[in-house]
Amino acid sequence: MDEFKKRLVHLVHCKHISWKTIAAFLKEDPELSFVSSSHSNSSATKHSSKIPPSMMKNIPIDNLLERYQHDEVKIISFFDCEYPAILKSIYQPPWVLFAKGHTSLLEADFPLAVVGSREASLYGKQVIDFLFPELIKHGAVVFSGLAKGIDTLAHLSAINHHGRTVAVIAGGFEHIYPKQNKELAEKLMREHLIISEYPPGTRPEKWHFPFRNRIISGLSKGTLVIEAKRRSGSFITADFALNEGREVFAVPGSILSPSHTGTNDLIQMGAKLVKEPKDIIEEIFL
Image 1 (spheres, helix red, strand yellow):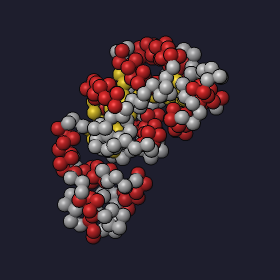
Image 2 (cartoon, rainbow, N blue to C red):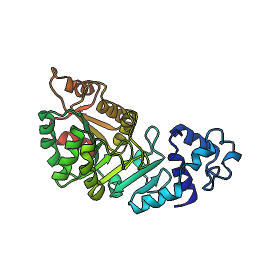
Image 3 (tube, rainbow, N blue to C red):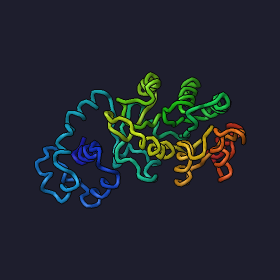
Image 4 (cartoon, rainbow, N blue to C red):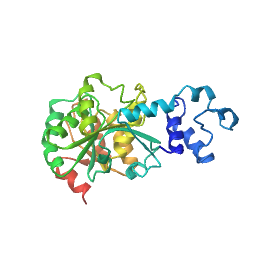
């Protein structure tokens, strides 16, 4: 790993340094030269008031990088050629992606985000069972968030139909949430892909979940919403997709069910109503 990338990864490990702060550092010092692996010059820079030397010293970056290499954690920075071009145009693209699995899936021709309610109904499961065989046949790689409900069903259906799937998680690999999906996560790490913008040892916090949704939609050409309440996490993901000019697809549901208010609202807002797989396939391949 070159020194610049190491400095950037070091900053990402500083819990209280925001995306905007790193952006400001890069603008003022494109080489991040003030970040020293020895920390000896941290207090001598104009940035020292923003990064206390003790904060940097408490991060054993060399040991961490050695451990990541041992654990087969790949690190992709915004400036690496492997960084997905489709992700660079989103709001606050991650400075670093931590990945376990097959990173070639980030370059899929048909990346499709699939999100929905954590309280998936039988209807939601039936929709996935109906849509996925044809979508997978056409090469769809399913991106979702490893959450309960629709996310989990989407990952499992992709696997069961011999497709490929990618999970974008909140927090790091060492703290999979929800815990009941740990076995699924381990399978994805071996045979598919899990990514996070947070270092592996990061515990997920409440705000991580809605913020990571910009990555789910940002890595995809289209976002399919199956069962979502109004202003839910799935609705937020669709919002990110709309703001980035990506396709948004929504499966209609009962007007009497709170679980479908979000999807029905999205259709009213201009999302494409999905009745069959070709409604998605035709839009992606136009």
